[in-house]
Amino acid sequence: MTLDRVMVRLYDRVPGRVVMNKWSWCIGCLLATILCLSTHANAGSVLLGDEPTFKGWEGKRQEREQMKREGTEKKEPVTPGEKDLTEQTQPWRFFENRFYGTVSAGLFMPSDSDLSSMGNDATISFKKGYLVGGAVGYEFGNNVRAEVEVAYRTANMDKGTFHGYENGLDGSLSTVSTLLNGYYDIPTNSIIRPYVGAGIGYSRVSIDAGTILGYQVWQHDTDGVFSYQASAGIGIKATPRLSVDLGYRYLGSQKFQFDTIDGTFNSHSLVLGLRYRF
Image (cartoon, rainbow, N blue to C red; front, top):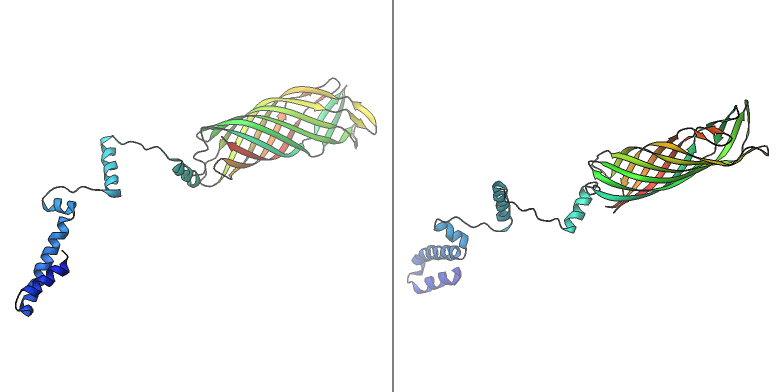
């Protein structure tokens, strides 16, 4: 029975309506209060002196705090939706402890090479060339990763200086290098993350037959040499698993020795790559 009906019945049945109207309102309010309290178990338990039962988010929060104090808290597994959200809000958190692969291409700029042939010294300059490469690596956590990289570099010769005279030179230089690289990714709170790295390995250096004014000055030859690399750049997160790498590479090697000539080789490269985490 609602408060309206209780008050109407009291008002109709009691004589002297004007006088009893005030009392009917008081009795109706008292009855309504009792009805409301009886419909709520928690409120009723408070009146009886019992401790109320907490429900909903507040109850769960207090229950977790109690379990944490007692050391019995259970860690709930992270759902795929929550993981995706965390990857969006913390871009580099899930880029650790997993394998990755890279493909790259860029501008290859060999430094001038000093050559020696039968006691004659020469300096060779090169035109700009290109490089392509790929790598497979693993991210260990703590911003450290390692990879095995294979890259092909090639450039045409430009000029040769012999006995103080400079002439146009036809020929090319190419290398296939296999390197073990280590990197350190500098932590940031953005999608851009700088890195530095170094590597060592082996390079197969090939030089085409060189000609000056139509005269061949050396033959085609190949040699394998120890190589080392230093690198720096930035990684830009494009998707939760894919990032774009912009980097610089310096590749050096020990002195190579062909049948007719020997010399030194090193180069600079600007690289654009894609890194995908599996």
